[in-house]
Image (cartoon, rainbow, N blue to C red; front, side, top):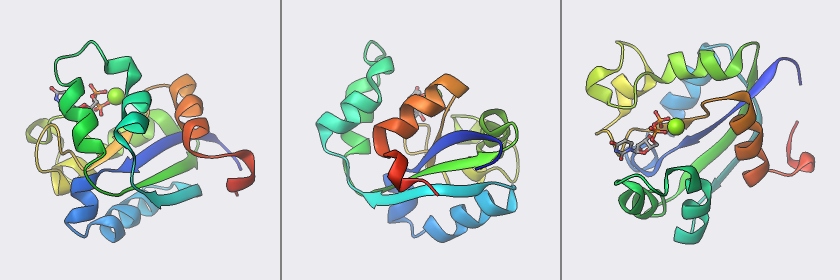
Amino acid sequence: MSGKITFTMIKPDGVEANNIGPILAKINEGGFRIVAMKYMRLTPEQAGAFYEVHKERPFYGELVAYMSSGPIVAAVLTKENAVADYRTLIGATDPTKAAPGTIRQLFAKSIAANAVHGSDSDENANIEADFFFSKLERY
Ligand code: UDP
Ligand code: MG
């Protein structure tokens, strides 16, 4: 693996709308390599643990219910400047504010069902990648 990592999920709305392929294409076109990937459904307990940092925010309960409502694709991506470049590629949390051509502008349904997750720091990228993947599952 060269460069730094970031962690992403294709959220339940992205999977439901059959956008796994188009989103992965944008990820590859953006210069990212996939070093780990799995297709799975989170339990509410797992989604709650993943989003623990948001537990005081008003949308936490809905976010946990939503993220466990259907299958997701989890992946670790690598590229130089991975965290910041991936945040640029996905666009703003609210898709109505996301820049043209970004993954959220193209594929998100709403501020909650916003197609993808992207890590917000190198530290969280490593924590999030370790939450989903062992060393043996990274290539
Ligand atoms: N979210 C929401 N309502 C809000 C803000 C966030 O439902 O007002 C959800 C949304 O799915 C978002 C996630 O909570 O992606 C995590 O929020 P964060 O502020 O970390 O946004 P992100 O880093 O995903 O852009
Ligand atoms: Mg965030």
